[in-house]
Length: 376
Ligand SMILES: *Cc1c(COP(=O)(O)O)cnc(C)c1O
Image (cartoon, rainbow, N blue to C red; front, side, top):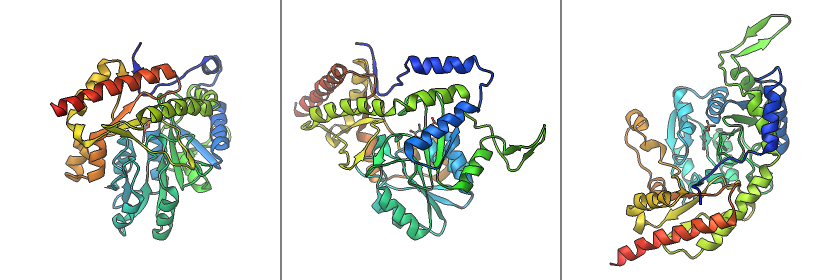
């Protein structure tokens, strides 16, 4: 069996045909295809505006910028995320205030309130692995303290909370279309918002702050960048979003199989899903019991050697050298523990149940060895 990645894209003939059509057309960057993809994102999520970017990282930068996040502001966020969630507001001069997570890797909504100060400007949660955070409680807190909620939903396109799709529920929501995210445009991202003013500013910021007027006349209204999505990328987005529900179904099938296989596992456990919500199943994490944390590196290596492309999500952001040097040593009990226990195993739309069986069998075989090792 060839190597199984923890996640991978699925590109089909219609994706390829769409890209070729764009390549033969006169327009290669931000045109009709970008508009069409933005409309498709609005339709899928029920949001008013979708503004695409060339990555979720630039989309996060755009969202934080139009929210006027800057020096002296504090942002309450999760350390269990990809670094760019924090990087982009640090870039704007704001300070990360990391809140501890729960055992499912999502921000602990109960721990947020005591972190709020007069400098707090926004709460930035991440739907880890696609499982929705407690948005309702976070919104309540935000309202009480007059804070913005900006969701980093890079894992969560297609996830929903009590029948409402993630994308239209907070001040702004960011998606990623990086190769292995729920759908892909190769690289790409978007900010979704119901706020007209934010939308207008986001469109300016992604393209040099400029507006076109008559003839050759244009005007630069604000500082801006080139964060535009290409027509090639947008074409992929258009064909991929049509398959999103099918992709999620396929990942769901693999996840259900794992859930069943792992329900009585003795040295690791899996994350419980919420009854009334849909998850994109962007990742399928297993969490090692603390007894075998010391063996995580060997377990990881053995799984890789056996052709199982595992990964770890995530080293807490504050453990990176840059953050230690800039903000000092920092530690949160559950986030640290989560990092010591988490391994993401293959779960994607290209996998067969037979491959999932191979993954599960191999995991049991390898992890059970450590049980015996403990006894002897
Ligand atoms: C992937 C990811 C990003 C960055 O997305 P890019 O499109 O690669 O810039 C940000 N936040 C989270 C949680 C991610 O998983």
